[in-house]
Length: 294
Length: 280
View 1 (cartoon, helix red, strand yellow):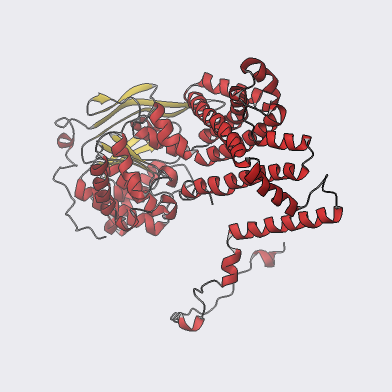
View 2 (tube, helix red, strand yellow):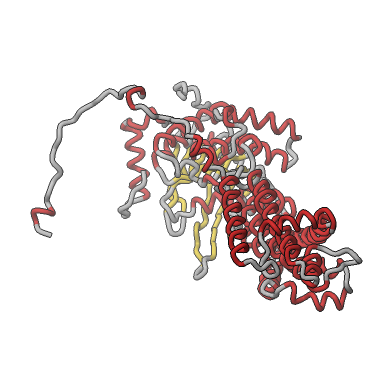
């Protein structure tokens, strides 16, 4: 750089003061959004449109393929679904699956809370949890099913066992990393109140780590749902009652492919409902409400 | 918020050493405290044999540049750090671990529980320590929130508040507990200059009303002179006591005056005799 550039000065300009004009002439300061803008802001609406588009694509492709044994049309699937609900007791089967799932889920959540609480309060507990999660998290729950059947027989207990395995580790992992990420200031504030032990865990750590815990709950839910359907496909009947997986398996054996698709649709619908209604509701009333998540 | 001149000036004679010491038992006695903490690579001595006493209704300031261990000292008084040497006692009892008799106001804005509203945040420690029932705690919380001028925001969640408002809530939360001593760790350092000034005035006004005992950490000489009644000046690496000064006669009004400037200069020279960087 030359000397002239290094020594340059900004030009001196005259000073001035102005009075600020009223908002009137400026026009739009705050304008209500148009109906279209408000409609497209509705997440539920946007997603419903997407779902409809997917259904249309399905219908079109299946009609073009014209092979109901391999790929039935959307409308046939809906008809089969209706038939399944009315004549084959599909809702009962869905309920059998769901209630089994909930049992395993609740047990796993309780276990995860206990294990992570121990892990955050002692160093050896911390080591134990880290080791166990790294051992068992990659192990597919369904791989334990043969062992579970040997130990607990062909019943709900075996299913619950694999479900607990499917939910526990991802949830514990998320919960633990959530606890670890709680800001030091919040921890000190909690201890300043004289909180310790369980009161500290439930009063400070769990709500502060709730975004991570919720993620763990969602992942755990998806794992559990997959594991359950897969397990039912393998051995279906639990104490004489079949679940959704069994419904799918049975209908495939009898080549009612439209009913197989109807069963799959129910699996998908329940998944959509849990994710978009139940978990969204929980999020809306907790982490979003608290400003911890946008 | 204007403060009537002279109204908050107290009867005790600070300049007479016999009146301040000896006859009165200190509220907080920190004697010969050495603090150390471990980093991944080394053991750091934060303070070395620091000694000071805080009396009831003091606005006691720990002042020093970064690295003088003033925050560590405050944490030790709060019970979060255990001294390796020396003792800390409050009301004649040794300090072991954190407790609600020493409420802390931190610098960080995330000290409030984000899942509770303003009033719940203030009431929660009262309920958690069983100091008050649910209803009583709620009423007391509302009262303290009114004192920091946040009544309108009692039902808001912390994430909707500005930084200054969050600090006000933290102060209200600490005041509601009526602690023996209020510990403040650079509570206004993260605020903009205008808000900081207002918060300092409000804090002094609150002190004037309630006459609590305050232990306040800052690195700003000006803030120390305005907020404090007595200043402990600490030297860095490791923190050692350099001086203890009276400053109860300065407020925002005095800030431009020659005497204030002289005092500012004196402390500044004490702290940065050979340093380059200054914080004001």
